[in-house]
Length: 327
Length: 303
Image 1 (cartoon, rainbow over the protein chains, first blue to last red):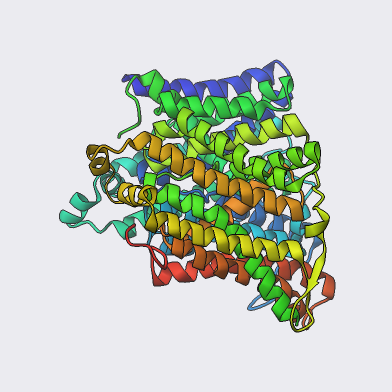
Image 2: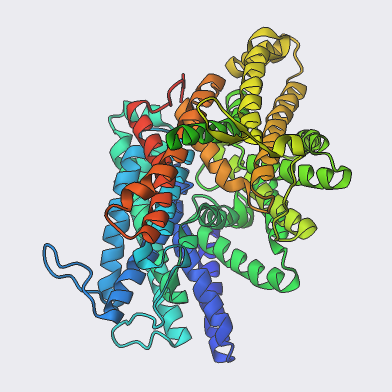
Protein backbone atom coordinates (compact mmCIF):
# COMPACT_ATOMS: atom_id res chain seq x y z
CA UNK A 1 0.00 0.00 0.00
CA UNK A 2 1.36 3.39 -0.92
CA UNK A 3 2.00 6.06 1.65
CA UNK A 4 -0.84 8.21 0.35
CA UNK A 5 -3.32 5.32 0.61
CA UNK A 6 -2.28 4.83 4.24
CA UNK A 7 -2.87 8.53 4.93
CA UNK A 8 -6.29 8.35 3.23
CA UNK A 9 -7.36 5.35 5.28
CA UNK A 10 -5.97 6.78 8.50
CA UNK A 11 -7.81 10.08 8.04
CA UNK A 12 -11.16 8.45 7.32
CA UNK A 13 -10.54 5.90 10.06
CA UNK A 14 -9.86 8.70 12.53
CA UNK A 15 -13.13 10.42 11.66
CA UNK A 16 -15.36 7.34 11.69
CA UNK A 17 -13.51 5.51 14.44
CA UNK A 18 -13.53 8.65 16.55
CA UNK A 19 -17.29 9.03 16.18
CA UNK A 20 -17.91 5.34 17.01
CA UNK A 21 -15.66 5.54 20.08
CA UNK A 22 -17.41 8.69 21.23
CA UNK A 23 -20.75 6.94 20.82
CA UNK A 24 -19.68 3.85 22.74
CA UNK A 25 -18.26 5.92 25.59
CA UNK A 26 -21.43 7.99 25.73
CA UNK A 27 -20.12 11.33 24.43
CA UNK A 28 -23.05 12.25 22.20
CA UNK A 29 -21.73 15.79 21.80
CA UNK A 30 -18.50 14.54 20.23
CA UNK A 31 -20.54 12.49 17.75
CA UNK A 32 -22.28 15.69 16.70
CA UNK A 33 -18.91 17.39 16.43
CA UNK A 34 -17.72 14.60 14.13
CA UNK A 35 -20.91 15.03 12.09
CA UNK A 36 -20.11 18.70 11.68
CA UNK A 37 -16.59 17.78 10.56
CA UNK A 38 -17.99 15.26 8.04
CA UNK A 39 -20.36 17.90 6.60
CA UNK A 40 -17.65 20.55 6.36
CA UNK A 41 -15.42 17.91 4.79
CA UNK A 42 -18.09 17.23 2.18
CA UNK A 43 -18.31 20.95 1.38
CA UNK A 44 -14.52 20.99 1.08
CA UNK A 45 -14.50 17.92 -1.16
CA UNK A 46 -16.89 19.81 -3.42
CA UNK A 47 -14.65 22.87 -3.57
CA UNK A 48 -11.53 20.72 -3.99
CA UNK A 49 -13.12 19.21 -7.10
CA UNK A 50 -13.02 22.60 -8.85
CA UNK A 51 -10.16 24.25 -6.97
CA UNK A 52 -7.74 21.42 -6.33
CA UNK A 53 -8.17 19.39 -9.50
CA UNK A 54 -9.45 22.03 -11.89
CA UNK A 55 -7.46 25.03 -10.66
CA UNK A 56 -10.66 27.08 -10.52
CA UNK A 57 -10.20 29.25 -7.44
CA UNK A 58 -13.82 29.86 -6.53
CA UNK A 59 -14.28 32.30 -3.66
CA UNK A 60 -18.03 31.95 -3.90
CA UNK A 61 -18.81 28.39 -2.90
CA UNK A 62 -20.83 29.62 0.06
CA UNK A 63 -23.46 30.43 -2.56
CA UNK A 64 -23.97 26.73 -3.26
CA UNK A 65 -23.60 25.76 0.39
CA UNK A 66 -26.33 28.26 1.23
CA UNK A 67 -28.54 27.31 -1.71
CA UNK A 68 -28.43 23.69 -0.55
CA UNK A 69 -29.37 24.87 2.92
CA UNK A 70 -32.19 27.09 1.76
CA UNK A 71 -33.71 24.47 -0.57
CA UNK A 72 -33.77 22.09 2.39
CA UNK A 73 -35.18 24.68 4.76
CA UNK A 74 -37.85 25.86 2.34
CA UNK A 75 -39.04 22.35 1.46
CA UNK A 76 -39.08 21.36 5.12
CA UNK A 77 -40.96 24.47 6.24
CA UNK A 78 -43.60 23.92 3.56
CA UNK A 79 -43.96 20.31 4.60
CA UNK A 80 -44.48 21.53 8.15
CA UNK A 81 -47.04 24.21 7.31
CA UNK A 82 -48.79 22.06 4.70
CA UNK A 83 -48.89 24.88 2.19
CA UNK A 84 -47.83 24.06 -1.35
CA UNK A 85 -44.62 25.68 -2.65
CA UNK A 86 -46.31 26.71 -5.84
CA UNK A 87 -49.54 25.87 -7.62
CA UNK A 88 -48.31 26.84 -11.09
CA UNK A 89 -47.83 25.06 -13.45
CA UNK A 90 -48.83 22.23 -11.12
CA UNK A 91 -49.09 21.85 -7.38
CA UNK A 92 -45.75 21.28 -5.72
CA UNK A 93 -45.71 20.41 -2.04
CA UNK A 94 -42.93 20.66 0.50
CA UNK A 95 -41.33 17.49 1.79
CA UNK A 96 -39.34 16.33 4.76
CA UNK A 97 -37.93 13.19 3.14
CA UNK A 98 -34.17 13.55 2.69
CA UNK A 99 -34.30 11.25 -0.31
CA UNK A 100 -36.67 13.71 -2.02
CA UNK A 101 -34.83 16.81 -0.79
CA UNK A 102 -31.35 15.80 -1.95
CA UNK A 103 -32.20 15.48 -5.69
CA UNK A 104 -33.87 18.88 -5.48
CA UNK A 105 -30.77 20.34 -3.78
CA UNK A 106 -28.51 18.85 -6.44
CA UNK A 107 -30.75 20.20 -9.19
CA UNK A 108 -31.03 23.75 -7.85
CA UNK A 109 -27.38 24.15 -6.88
CA UNK A 110 -26.35 22.61 -10.20
CA UNK A 111 -28.50 25.05 -12.16
CA UNK A 112 -27.19 28.00 -10.14
CA UNK A 113 -23.64 26.84 -10.80
CA UNK A 114 -24.37 26.47 -14.49
CA UNK A 115 -25.43 30.12 -14.70
CA UNK A 116 -22.67 31.46 -12.45
CA UNK A 117 -20.02 29.23 -14.00
CA UNK A 118 -20.95 30.08 -17.58
CA UNK A 119 -20.44 33.77 -16.80
CA UNK A 120 -17.47 33.46 -14.45
CA UNK A 121 -15.48 31.08 -16.64
CA UNK A 122 -15.29 33.75 -19.30
CA UNK A 123 -12.70 35.28 -16.99
CA UNK A 124 -9.65 33.76 -15.34
CA UNK A 125 -7.12 34.44 -12.61
CA UNK A 126 -7.90 37.25 -10.20
CA UNK A 127 -11.04 38.14 -12.13
CA UNK A 128 -12.46 34.66 -11.61
CA UNK A 129 -11.83 34.81 -7.86
CA UNK A 130 -13.57 38.14 -7.52
CA UNK A 131 -16.43 37.38 -9.88
CA UNK A 132 -17.37 34.19 -8.03
CA UNK A 133 -17.18 36.15 -4.78
CA UNK A 134 -19.43 38.84 -6.21
CA UNK A 135 -22.05 36.36 -7.41
CA UNK A 136 -22.13 34.79 -3.97
CA UNK A 137 -22.65 38.25 -2.46
CA UNK A 138 -25.50 38.82 -4.87
CA UNK A 139 -27.28 35.71 -3.64
CA UNK A 140 -26.45 36.67 -0.05
CA UNK A 141 -28.17 40.04 -0.42
CA UNK A 142 -31.11 38.40 -2.10
CA UNK A 143 -31.54 36.06 0.87
CA UNK A 144 -31.23 38.98 3.31
CA UNK A 145 -33.90 40.95 1.53
CA UNK A 146 -36.34 38.21 0.61
CA UNK A 147 -38.95 38.42 3.39
CA UNK A 148 -40.89 35.21 2.61
CA UNK A 149 -38.32 32.89 4.21
CA UNK A 150 -37.11 34.86 7.19
CA UNK A 151 -34.82 37.35 5.48
CA UNK A 152 -31.93 38.33 7.71
CA UNK A 153 -33.26 36.27 10.66
CA UNK A 154 -33.10 32.97 8.82
CA UNK A 155 -35.52 30.07 8.85
CA UNK A 156 -35.97 27.37 11.49
CA UNK A 157 -37.61 24.02 10.88
CA UNK A 158 -37.48 22.37 14.35
CA UNK A 159 -37.49 18.71 13.23
CA UNK A 160 -34.65 17.06 11.32
CA UNK A 161 -35.85 15.66 8.00
CA UNK A 162 -36.55 11.95 7.70
CA UNK A 163 -34.56 9.12 6.14
CA UNK A 164 -36.38 5.81 5.54
CA UNK A 165 -35.79 3.36 8.37
CA UNK A 166 -33.44 5.62 10.31
CA UNK A 167 -34.05 7.69 13.43
CA UNK A 168 -32.26 10.84 12.21
CA UNK A 169 -32.38 12.65 15.54
CA UNK A 170 -30.20 9.91 17.05
CA UNK A 171 -26.64 11.38 16.80
CA UNK A 172 -24.84 8.25 15.59
CA UNK A 173 -27.37 7.38 12.86
CA UNK A 174 -27.23 10.94 11.63
CA UNK A 175 -23.44 10.84 11.64
CA UNK A 176 -23.48 7.61 9.65
CA UNK A 177 -25.76 9.15 7.00
CA UNK A 178 -23.38 12.12 6.62
CA UNK A 179 -20.27 9.98 6.67
CA UNK A 180 -21.84 7.61 4.15
CA UNK A 181 -22.48 10.48 1.75
CA UNK A 182 -18.93 11.73 2.33
CA UNK A 183 -17.47 8.30 1.49
CA UNK A 184 -19.62 7.98 -1.63
CA UNK A 185 -18.55 11.41 -2.81
CA UNK A 186 -14.88 10.63 -2.15
CA UNK A 187 -15.28 7.43 -4.17
CA UNK A 188 -16.97 9.37 -6.96
CA UNK A 189 -14.18 11.97 -6.97
CA UNK A 190 -11.46 9.32 -7.05
CA UNK A 191 -13.12 7.52 -9.98
CA UNK A 192 -13.82 10.70 -11.95
CA UNK A 193 -10.26 12.00 -11.52
CA UNK A 194 -8.87 8.79 -13.00
CA UNK A 195 -11.31 8.86 -15.91
CA UNK A 196 -10.73 10.73 -19.17
CA UNK A 197 -12.78 13.69 -17.95
CA UNK A 198 -10.74 14.08 -14.76
CA UNK A 199 -7.45 13.72 -16.59
CA UNK A 200 -8.47 16.38 -19.09
CA UNK A 201 -9.53 18.66 -16.25
CA UNK A 202 -6.19 18.29 -14.49
CA UNK A 203 -4.32 18.70 -17.75
CA UNK A 204 -6.14 21.96 -18.39
CA UNK A 205 -5.10 23.19 -14.95
CA UNK A 206 -1.44 22.39 -15.47
CA UNK A 207 -1.09 23.70 -18.97
CA UNK A 208 -4.07 25.16 -20.75
CA UNK A 209 -2.24 25.83 -24.00
CA UNK A 210 -1.00 22.29 -24.41
CA UNK A 211 -4.43 20.93 -23.60
CA UNK A 212 -5.93 23.09 -26.30
CA UNK A 213 -3.16 22.02 -28.68
CA UNK A 214 -4.06 18.34 -28.32
CA UNK A 215 -7.64 19.17 -29.21
CA UNK A 216 -9.41 19.47 -25.86
CA UNK A 217 -11.52 22.54 -25.31
CA UNK A 218 -11.23 23.42 -21.61
CA UNK A 219 -14.37 25.55 -21.24
CA UNK A 220 -16.92 22.71 -21.26
CA UNK A 221 -14.79 20.54 -19.01
CA UNK A 222 -14.24 23.34 -16.54
CA UNK A 223 -17.92 24.24 -16.52
CA UNK A 224 -18.87 20.61 -15.88
CA UNK A 225 -16.35 20.42 -13.04
CA UNK A 226 -17.67 23.68 -11.58
CA UNK A 227 -21.25 22.40 -11.68
CA UNK A 228 -20.35 19.03 -10.11
CA UNK A 229 -18.31 20.81 -7.48
CA UNK A 230 -21.23 23.11 -6.65
CA UNK A 231 -23.64 20.17 -6.43
CA UNK A 232 -21.43 18.44 -3.87
CA UNK A 233 -21.09 21.61 -1.82
CA UNK A 234 -24.86 22.15 -2.12
CA UNK A 235 -25.47 18.68 -0.72
CA UNK A 236 -23.19 19.56 2.20
CA UNK A 237 -25.26 22.70 2.72
CA UNK A 238 -28.41 20.59 2.87
CA UNK A 239 -26.86 18.38 5.55
CA UNK A 240 -25.63 21.42 7.46
CA UNK A 241 -29.15 22.84 7.46
CA UNK A 242 -30.42 19.52 8.79
CA UNK A 243 -27.68 19.43 11.42
CA UNK A 244 -28.73 22.80 12.84
CA UNK A 245 -32.38 22.62 11.71
CA UNK A 246 -31.85 26.24 10.81
CA UNK A 247 -30.71 28.18 7.76
CA UNK A 248 -29.69 31.83 7.61
CA UNK A 249 -27.91 34.16 5.21
CA UNK A 250 -24.72 33.49 7.23
CA UNK A 251 -24.42 30.24 5.25
CA UNK A 252 -24.17 32.38 2.10
CA UNK A 253 -21.72 34.98 3.40
CA UNK A 254 -18.24 35.55 1.97
CA UNK A 255 -16.85 34.40 5.30
CA UNK A 256 -18.32 30.93 4.72
CA UNK A 257 -16.65 30.81 1.30
CA UNK A 258 -13.38 31.59 3.03
CA UNK A 259 -13.94 28.87 5.62
CA UNK A 260 -14.67 26.22 2.98
CA UNK A 261 -11.46 27.27 1.29
CA UNK A 262 -9.62 26.96 4.60
CA UNK A 263 -10.75 23.31 4.97
CA UNK A 264 -9.24 22.53 1.59
CA UNK A 265 -5.97 24.38 2.18
CA UNK A 266 -5.36 23.21 5.74
CA UNK A 267 -5.80 19.63 4.59
CA UNK A 268 -4.04 19.83 1.26
CA UNK A 269 -5.06 21.16 -2.14
CA UNK A 270 -5.79 18.57 -4.80
CA UNK A 271 -5.55 15.67 -2.33
CA UNK A 272 -8.46 13.28 -2.11
CA UNK A 273 -8.83 13.36 1.68
CA UNK A 274 -7.25 16.80 2.10
CA UNK A 275 -10.58 18.51 2.85
CA UNK A 276 -11.48 15.78 5.35
CA UNK A 277 -8.26 16.30 7.28
CA UNK A 278 -8.68 20.07 7.03
CA UNK A 279 -12.28 20.06 8.24
CA UNK A 280 -11.37 17.76 11.14
CA UNK A 281 -8.53 20.05 12.19
CA UNK A 282 -10.75 23.13 11.84
CA UNK A 283 -13.59 21.69 13.94
CA UNK A 284 -11.13 20.41 16.54
CA UNK A 285 -9.40 23.79 16.76
CA UNK A 286 -12.73 25.59 16.98
CA UNK A 287 -13.78 23.30 19.81
CA UNK A 288 -10.54 23.27 21.81
CA UNK A 289 -9.30 26.83 21.24
CA UNK A 290 -12.81 28.25 21.37
CA UNK A 291 -13.00 26.85 24.91
CA UNK A 292 -9.80 28.67 25.90
CA UNK A 293 -10.44 32.07 24.38
CA UNK A 294 -13.18 33.89 22.53
CA UNK A 295 -10.49 35.20 20.24
CA UNK A 296 -9.47 31.78 18.94
CA UNK A 297 -9.65 33.02 15.37
CA UNK A 298 -6.41 34.96 15.89
CA UNK A 299 -4.77 31.58 16.43
CA UNK A 300 -6.59 30.10 13.45
CA UNK A 301 -5.29 33.01 11.38
CA UNK A 302 -1.73 32.40 12.55
CA UNK A 303 -1.96 28.66 11.84
CA UNK A 304 -3.39 29.37 8.39
CA UNK A 305 -0.68 31.92 7.67
CA UNK A 306 1.95 29.40 8.73
CA UNK A 307 0.49 26.70 6.49
CA UNK A 308 0.32 29.00 3.47
CA UNK A 309 3.83 30.39 3.94
CA UNK A 310 5.75 27.33 5.02
CA UNK A 311 3.75 24.21 4.26
CA UNK A 312 1.67 24.85 1.15
CA UNK A 313 0.80 21.16 0.83
CA UNK A 314 -1.29 21.24 4.02
CA UNK A 315 -1.55 18.31 6.42
CA UNK A 316 -1.64 15.62 3.75
CA UNK A 317 1.25 17.21 1.87
CA UNK A 318 3.29 17.33 5.08
CA UNK A 319 2.56 13.70 5.97
CA UNK A 320 3.21 12.36 2.50
CA UNK A 321 6.41 14.40 2.28
CA UNK A 322 5.67 15.47 -1.26
CA UNK A 323 4.37 19.01 -0.90
CA UNK A 324 1.41 20.15 -2.86
CA UNK A 325 -0.88 17.52 -4.39
CA UNK A 326 -0.36 16.57 -8.04
CA UNK A 327 1.18 19.96 -8.80
CA UNK B 1 -34.73 67.44 -5.91
CA UNK B 2 -34.65 64.02 -4.30
CA UNK B 3 -32.95 62.71 -7.40
CA UNK B 4 -30.29 65.42 -7.24
CA UNK B 5 -29.61 64.66 -3.59
CA UNK B 6 -29.26 60.98 -4.38
CA UNK B 7 -26.88 61.79 -7.22
CA UNK B 8 -24.71 63.67 -4.72
CA UNK B 9 -24.93 60.74 -2.29
CA UNK B 10 -23.89 58.42 -5.08
CA UNK B 11 -20.99 60.68 -5.92
CA UNK B 12 -19.86 60.75 -2.30
CA UNK B 13 -20.21 56.97 -1.93
CA UNK B 14 -18.40 56.47 -5.21
CA UNK B 15 -15.51 58.64 -3.99
CA UNK B 16 -15.02 56.57 -0.83
CA UNK B 17 -15.14 53.42 -2.96
CA UNK B 18 -12.56 54.97 -5.23
CA UNK B 19 -10.19 55.54 -2.30
CA UNK B 20 -10.45 51.82 -1.49
CA UNK B 21 -10.31 50.61 -5.06
CA UNK B 22 -7.32 52.79 -6.03
CA UNK B 23 -5.07 50.98 -3.56
CA UNK B 24 -6.41 47.57 -4.55
CA UNK B 25 -5.99 48.15 -8.25
CA UNK B 26 -2.46 49.54 -7.81
CA UNK B 27 -1.41 46.52 -5.78
CA UNK B 28 -3.04 44.18 -8.31
CA UNK B 29 -1.57 45.96 -11.26
CA UNK B 30 1.95 46.48 -9.97
CA UNK B 31 2.55 43.45 -7.78
CA UNK B 32 -0.02 41.04 -9.19
CA UNK B 33 -1.30 40.50 -5.67
CA UNK B 34 -4.87 39.97 -4.53
CA UNK B 35 -5.14 41.54 -1.10
CA UNK B 36 -8.19 40.69 1.00
CA UNK B 37 -6.63 42.43 4.00
CA UNK B 38 -7.25 45.78 2.34
CA UNK B 39 -10.53 45.89 4.27
CA UNK B 40 -8.59 45.49 7.51
CA UNK B 41 -6.45 48.52 6.62
CA UNK B 42 -9.69 50.44 6.13
CA UNK B 43 -10.78 49.33 9.59
CA UNK B 44 -7.40 50.26 11.08
CA UNK B 45 -7.74 53.74 9.59
CA UNK B 46 -11.19 54.14 11.10
CA UNK B 47 -10.09 52.99 14.56
CA UNK B 48 -6.97 55.16 14.46
CA UNK B 49 -9.11 58.16 13.55
CA UNK B 50 -11.54 57.40 16.40
CA UNK B 51 -8.76 56.97 18.96
CA UNK B 52 -6.73 60.04 17.94
CA UNK B 53 -9.84 62.23 17.66
CA UNK B 54 -10.92 61.16 21.12
CA UNK B 55 -7.47 61.74 22.62
CA UNK B 56 -6.81 65.13 21.03
CA UNK B 57 -10.32 66.36 20.35
CA UNK B 58 -9.28 67.28 16.84
CA UNK B 59 -10.79 65.48 13.84
CA UNK B 60 -8.07 66.71 11.50
CA UNK B 61 -5.39 65.10 13.64
CA UNK B 62 -7.57 61.99 13.66
CA UNK B 63 -7.69 61.91 9.86
CA UNK B 64 -3.91 62.40 9.72
CA UNK B 65 -3.59 59.60 12.28
CA UNK B 66 -5.67 57.29 10.10
CA UNK B 67 -3.38 57.93 7.14
CA UNK B 68 -0.28 57.32 9.23
CA UNK B 69 -1.59 54.24 11.05
CA UNK B 70 -2.87 52.54 7.91
CA UNK B 71 0.32 53.34 5.98
CA UNK B 72 2.44 51.96 8.81
CA UNK B 73 0.31 48.84 9.17
CA UNK B 74 0.46 48.41 5.39
CA UNK B 75 4.24 48.74 5.26
CA UNK B 76 4.56 46.34 8.19
CA UNK B 77 2.41 43.55 6.73
CA UNK B 78 4.05 44.05 3.36
CA UNK B 79 7.48 43.46 4.86
CA UNK B 80 6.44 40.60 7.15
CA UNK B 81 3.94 38.65 5.07
CA UNK B 82 2.90 40.06 1.70
CA UNK B 83 6.45 40.15 0.34
CA UNK B 84 6.61 36.35 0.50
CA UNK B 85 3.45 36.05 -1.57
CA UNK B 86 4.36 37.85 -4.81
CA UNK B 87 5.75 34.73 -6.43
CA UNK B 88 2.92 32.50 -5.17
CA UNK B 89 -0.31 31.78 -7.00
CA UNK B 90 -3.51 33.68 -6.28
CA UNK B 91 -4.87 30.92 -4.08
CA UNK B 92 -2.04 31.34 -1.57
CA UNK B 93 -2.51 35.10 -1.66
CA UNK B 94 -6.23 34.82 -0.98
CA UNK B 95 -5.64 32.49 1.94
CA UNK B 96 -2.77 34.35 3.54
CA UNK B 97 -4.65 37.63 3.37
CA UNK B 98 -7.81 35.90 4.63
CA UNK B 99 -5.69 34.80 7.59
CA UNK B 100 -4.62 38.43 8.07
CA UNK B 101 -8.30 39.46 8.16
CA UNK B 102 -8.95 36.95 10.94
CA UNK B 103 -5.95 38.21 12.91
CA UNK B 104 -6.77 41.91 12.48
CA UNK B 105 -10.52 41.56 13.09
CA UNK B 106 -10.16 39.48 16.23
CA UNK B 107 -7.28 41.66 17.38
CA UNK B 108 -9.43 44.77 17.00
CA UNK B 109 -12.31 43.05 18.80
CA UNK B 110 -9.92 42.22 21.64
CA UNK B 111 -8.62 45.79 21.87
CA UNK B 112 -11.82 47.75 21.32
CA UNK B 113 -14.68 45.31 21.96
CA UNK B 114 -17.61 44.58 19.70
CA UNK B 115 -19.49 47.81 20.30
CA UNK B 116 -19.33 50.48 17.61
CA UNK B 117 -17.49 53.72 18.34
CA UNK B 118 -18.87 57.03 17.13
CA UNK B 119 -16.93 60.06 15.99
CA UNK B 120 -18.00 63.64 16.56
CA UNK B 121 -17.27 65.97 13.69
CA UNK B 122 -15.83 69.45 14.30
CA UNK B 123 -18.49 72.20 14.05
CA UNK B 124 -16.99 73.46 10.80
CA UNK B 125 -17.82 70.15 9.15
CA UNK B 126 -20.93 69.09 11.02
CA UNK B 127 -23.36 71.65 9.57
CA UNK B 128 -25.22 71.83 6.30
CA UNK B 129 -25.06 74.19 3.36
CA UNK B 130 -27.80 75.28 1.02
CA UNK B 131 -26.78 74.56 -2.52
CA UNK B 132 -27.97 76.57 -5.51
CA UNK B 133 -31.47 75.29 -6.20
CA UNK B 134 -32.39 75.17 -2.53
CA UNK B 135 -31.03 71.72 -1.66
CA UNK B 136 -29.73 71.43 1.92
CA UNK B 137 -26.73 69.10 2.05
CA UNK B 138 -24.22 68.17 4.79
CA UNK B 139 -20.87 69.96 4.51
CA UNK B 140 -18.95 66.84 5.42
CA UNK B 141 -20.33 64.85 2.49
CA UNK B 142 -19.50 67.68 0.10
CA UNK B 143 -16.02 67.71 1.63
CA UNK B 144 -15.66 63.98 0.92
CA UNK B 145 -16.58 64.57 -2.72
CA UNK B 146 -14.04 67.40 -2.98
CA UNK B 147 -11.34 65.38 -1.25
CA UNK B 148 -12.01 62.43 -3.56
CA UNK B 149 -11.61 64.61 -6.63
CA UNK B 150 -8.41 66.11 -5.24
CA UNK B 151 -6.94 62.69 -4.46
CA UNK B 152 -7.90 61.32 -7.86
CA UNK B 153 -6.19 64.30 -9.50
CA UNK B 154 -3.17 63.82 -7.22
CA UNK B 155 -2.92 60.13 -8.14
CA UNK B 156 -3.07 60.91 -11.85
CA UNK B 157 -0.36 63.49 -11.39
CA UNK B 158 1.73 61.05 -9.35
CA UNK B 159 1.37 58.26 -11.90
CA UNK B 160 2.05 60.35 -14.99
CA UNK B 161 4.28 63.23 -13.94
CA UNK B 162 6.66 61.98 -11.28
CA UNK B 163 9.61 59.64 -11.27
CA UNK B 164 7.88 57.43 -8.70
CA UNK B 165 4.85 57.11 -10.96
CA UNK B 166 7.01 56.22 -13.93
CA UNK B 167 8.68 53.53 -11.86
CA UNK B 168 5.35 52.17 -10.69
CA UNK B 169 4.08 51.95 -14.25
CA UNK B 170 7.34 50.40 -15.36
CA UNK B 171 7.05 47.84 -12.58
CA UNK B 172 3.58 47.02 -13.84
CA UNK B 173 4.89 46.41 -17.33
CA UNK B 174 8.04 44.43 -16.51
CA UNK B 175 9.21 43.96 -12.98
CA UNK B 176 12.46 42.21 -13.82
CA UNK B 177 13.52 44.86 -16.30
CA UNK B 178 13.20 47.76 -13.89
CA UNK B 179 15.09 45.73 -11.32
CA UNK B 180 17.84 45.28 -13.87
CA UNK B 181 17.84 49.03 -14.47
CA UNK B 182 18.79 49.59 -10.86
CA UNK B 183 15.47 50.38 -9.17
CA UNK B 184 15.12 48.74 -5.78
CA UNK B 185 11.95 46.74 -6.37
CA UNK B 186 11.32 45.80 -2.77
CA UNK B 187 11.33 49.42 -1.56
CA UNK B 188 9.10 50.40 -4.48
CA UNK B 189 6.63 47.64 -3.63
CA UNK B 190 6.57 48.59 0.05
CA UNK B 191 5.89 52.21 -0.96
CA UNK B 192 3.07 51.29 -3.32
CA UNK B 193 1.52 49.03 -0.72
CA UNK B 194 1.77 51.70 1.99
CA UNK B 195 0.25 54.28 -0.38
CA UNK B 196 -2.70 52.01 -1.11
CA UNK B 197 -3.05 51.27 2.60
CA UNK B 198 -3.05 54.98 3.48
CA UNK B 199 -5.85 55.64 0.99
CA UNK B 200 -7.86 52.76 2.43
CA UNK B 201 -7.26 54.08 5.96
CA UNK B 202 -8.45 57.53 4.94
CA UNK B 203 -11.58 56.03 3.39
CA UNK B 204 -12.19 54.19 6.66
CA UNK B 205 -11.85 57.42 8.66
CA UNK B 206 -14.23 59.28 6.34
CA UNK B 207 -16.90 56.58 6.41
CA UNK B 208 -16.37 55.99 10.14
CA UNK B 209 -17.10 59.66 10.76
CA UNK B 210 -20.50 59.46 9.06
CA UNK B 211 -21.54 55.98 10.18
CA UNK B 212 -19.72 54.21 13.01
CA UNK B 213 -16.41 52.53 13.65
CA UNK B 214 -16.64 48.81 14.34
CA UNK B 215 -15.01 45.44 13.77
CA UNK B 216 -15.94 43.91 10.44
CA UNK B 217 -16.72 47.25 8.80
CA UNK B 218 -14.04 46.68 6.18
CA UNK B 219 -15.22 43.55 4.43
CA UNK B 220 -18.50 44.73 2.85
CA UNK B 221 -16.63 47.72 1.44
CA UNK B 222 -13.77 45.49 0.35
CA UNK B 223 -16.07 43.30 -1.70
CA UNK B 224 -17.63 46.36 -3.34
CA UNK B 225 -14.14 47.68 -4.03
CA UNK B 226 -13.38 44.37 -5.76
CA UNK B 227 -16.44 44.87 -7.90
CA UNK B 228 -15.21 48.36 -8.73
CA UNK B 229 -11.77 47.03 -9.68
CA UNK B 230 -13.25 44.25 -11.82
CA UNK B 231 -15.58 46.63 -13.64
CA UNK B 232 -12.85 49.22 -14.15
CA UNK B 233 -10.21 46.74 -15.23
CA UNK B 234 -7.31 45.65 -13.04
CA UNK B 235 -4.46 48.15 -12.76
CA UNK B 236 -6.30 51.11 -14.22
CA UNK B 237 -6.72 54.11 -11.89
CA UNK B 238 -8.94 55.87 -14.42
CA UNK B 239 -11.07 52.76 -14.76
CA UNK B 240 -11.32 52.53 -10.98
CA UNK B 241 -12.51 56.15 -10.76
CA UNK B 242 -15.13 55.75 -13.45
CA UNK B 243 -16.45 52.45 -12.17
CA UNK B 244 -16.41 53.61 -8.53
CA UNK B 245 -18.72 56.46 -9.52
CA UNK B 246 -20.86 54.08 -11.57
CA UNK B 247 -21.16 51.63 -8.66
CA UNK B 248 -21.79 54.43 -6.15
CA UNK B 249 -24.56 55.89 -8.30
CA UNK B 250 -26.17 52.51 -8.99
CA UNK B 251 -26.23 51.69 -5.30
CA UNK B 252 -27.51 55.08 -4.09
CA UNK B 253 -30.13 55.53 -6.79
CA UNK B 254 -31.27 51.93 -6.37
CA UNK B 255 -31.61 52.34 -2.61
CA UNK B 256 -33.57 55.57 -3.05
CA UNK B 257 -35.81 54.61 -5.93
CA UNK B 258 -36.45 50.87 -5.70
CA UNK B 259 -38.40 50.85 -2.40
CA UNK B 260 -40.89 53.45 -3.65
CA UNK B 261 -41.25 51.61 -6.98
CA UNK B 262 -41.82 48.29 -5.20
CA UNK B 263 -44.28 49.92 -2.79
CA UNK B 264 -46.67 50.21 -5.73
CA UNK B 265 -47.08 46.44 -5.77
CA UNK B 266 -46.45 45.38 -2.16
CA UNK B 267 -46.69 46.67 1.43
CA UNK B 268 -44.25 49.48 2.29
CA UNK B 269 -42.34 47.54 4.97
CA UNK B 270 -41.43 44.61 2.75
CA UNK B 271 -40.83 46.96 -0.18
CA UNK B 272 -38.19 48.69 1.96
CA UNK B 273 -36.22 45.54 2.79
CA UNK B 274 -36.61 44.01 -0.66
CA UNK B 275 -35.72 47.31 -2.33
CA UNK B 276 -32.58 47.68 -0.22
CA UNK B 277 -31.35 44.21 -1.08
CA UNK B 278 -32.27 44.53 -4.74
CA UNK B 279 -30.22 47.73 -4.74
CA UNK B 280 -27.32 45.83 -3.19
CA UNK B 281 -27.74 43.14 -5.87
CA UNK B 282 -27.95 45.68 -8.69
CA UNK B 283 -24.25 46.44 -8.31
CA UNK B 284 -23.38 42.79 -8.95
CA UNK B 285 -25.79 42.61 -11.86
CA UNK B 286 -24.01 45.64 -13.31
CA UNK B 287 -20.72 43.78 -12.91
CA UNK B 288 -22.04 40.64 -14.57
CA UNK B 289 -23.29 42.72 -17.50
CA UNK B 290 -19.93 44.46 -17.92
CA UNK B 291 -18.07 41.15 -17.79
CA UNK B 292 -20.27 39.55 -20.41
CA UNK B 293 -19.50 42.50 -22.62
CA UNK B 294 -15.79 42.89 -21.71
CA UNK B 295 -14.28 40.05 -19.65
CA UNK B 296 -11.31 42.18 -18.55
CA UNK B 297 -13.32 45.18 -17.43
CA UNK B 298 -13.83 48.56 -19.03
CA UNK B 299 -10.17 49.61 -19.11
CA UNK B 300 -8.45 46.28 -18.53
CA UNK B 301 -5.72 45.49 -21.00
CA UNK B 302 -4.94 41.93 -20.02
CA UNK B 303 -6.44 39.15 -17.98
